[in-house]
Image (cartoon, rainbow, N blue to C red):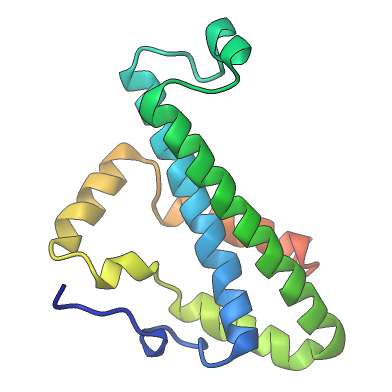
Length: 153
């Protein structure tokens, strides 16, 4: 409770363009993290990675796996909305948008890291799961976004 989140903690997050760009990375990163947690929960439940016949018939997963599936879906929807906004910015303000993307990528940090009281412990645990680390970020967040925006091949 003593710590507060502020946009000023993140480079480039100083207007609507920066917010859209930051949101594109943050929402996709959260989606990737949530997908990994979803798979760990299924594994912990003794379930296969894909839906069981019972889950398919019922139309939802079991327990916390269903919760994480829904949360993950919400995050990727937010990502898509922000990505569409960034495409619009690139169309009408290409140079300014590319520069803002560069700024945000260089200083990008997930917002929760500023708020966790024992963040170093959390980051160590997260890395141990291999759900989310620098390599995962690069391959499943950064590169797909840049490709989608036509900024890399």
